[in-house]
Length: 301
Image 1 (tube, one colour):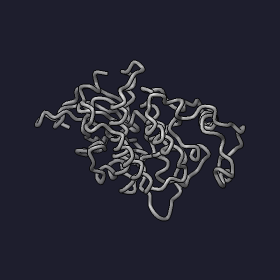
Image 2 (tube, helix red, strand yellow):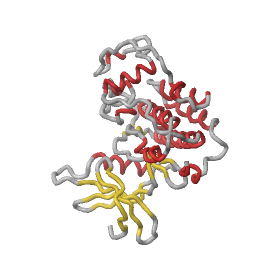
Image 3 (cartoon, helix red, strand yellow):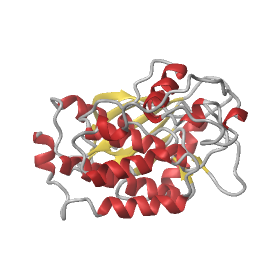
């Protein structure tokens, strides 16, 4: 740890404290994530090991870079590239107004990073604004892979306790443990809508039932006809038969017609296949400005 000078505490992560620090040799600013090691025999938390293993394999400009791992008897420190803020803090800095070019830029980068993860058979499983970091160049990076999992064939059973409530898809809310890239794509769709509304969450539920009710009121309550075998999900229970009264197009009035179509395509695929993600990514690039929005313009909004 002599190599780094701690400058300030910048937050609490999934399993430890995060500090802004400076490399004493290169003067580069980094982020130190200090992992709590319990006194029992369990050693390093599985979430920390998972993040280390995955980030060693995931090298991409839209995924936060893990520089180093420092380990001693009583502490483990992960050294990451430093980003100035996360998307949640960026939302908090807005006054209800966001430039559509910024929306397009951030969405493109989110999907590009996510497509890379999925092409490497990795599910993030905890996408939310707090886990999307933004640097001074306006680059958005996926972070906090403490809940991420590798997936493959055959489909495995995973935990249903994943993804922050507001960004959790209906099948997982009903206790599904068999899922694939659709879990991340639903979260991405919710974040897309939140971007388009300058930080106003799409489905800010207070608990699981309220979350499902908000989703069904907007998109309609699924039935066995529209969602075969929904009643077989572990935590399924019937809900009133809501009919959509306010679609996604109405809650994102600032999006272009193509943007609204893209949002609908991201959120409607419960049985999403990886091939579709590349189609979505391709269609996203066609609605982007010819150049990324300048970072100075982004942070002056």
